[in-house]
Image (cartoon, rainbow, N blue to C red):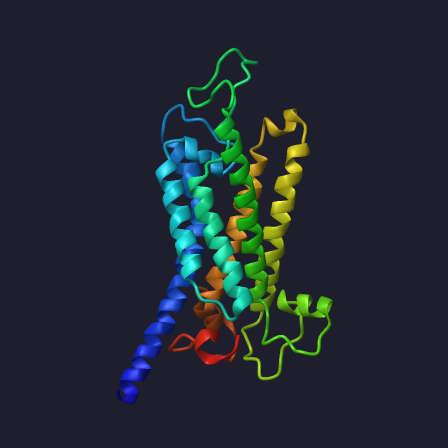
Length: 272
C-alpha cells in the first residue's frame, strides 16, 4: 500500500470517529425536544412527567429507536483505555436496557374523577419489577454518561506514582496535563468538566425531585427537565469531542488560521 493510500485511509478513519461523536451529540441533544414537540402534535396527548414516560405515548417508536441507536453507538465506540471502554459499554448497554424495560406507567388515582386513557388503576407485579429495573438502568446510564464527559477532560495518561484519590481525580479530568500532552483550544477542557458535573448534578436533582410536594410537581415536569438537562449536557460534550465547534473557534481566535483538516483523535495519535 502506498503512502498516499495509507494517509487517505487514516483520514477516513479520523472522519468516521468525528462523525460518530457528532451523531451521538445530535441524538442526545435533540431527543427531549423531538419527544416534546412531536407529542404535542397529537391532539389530547398526555404530557409525561419524564422522558421515559414517552414510551406510553405516540412517540414510543422515536423514543425506543433513539435510545437503541445511541446505545449501539456507545457500545461500538472504542475509548482511550480499558476504563473508557467499560464506561462506554455500561452506558450503551444500560441505554438499550432502558428502551426495552419501560418505566412504570402512570397510575390514575381517580382523584379528579377522570382518568386519561393511557393511565391504569393499578400496576401489575411485572410492571413493578420491570419499572424498578428501568430505574436502575436509567440511573446507571446517566451516571456513566456523566463520568464519560469528565473522562474527556483527562489530559494524558495517569501518572503511575499517584495515590488512590489523586489517581481518581486525574482519571476524572481534574489533573494537570501530562508531559507531551497535545494542547487543546481554550475552554475545551472546561466544557468537558462542566458537562460532566452538570450530568451528575441533574441526576442528583432528579432523585431529590421526588421529595417535592405534590402541589409543586403538579405544575412542572421536574423529572423531565432534569433528565433533559443531563442528556443535553452529555450531547454538548460529544459535539466538542467531535470538533463540531472547532471551526468556529478557529475563526474567532486571533492570529490563528482555520485548520484545513480535522486533528486525529487520540485513539489514532496516542494522545488526548
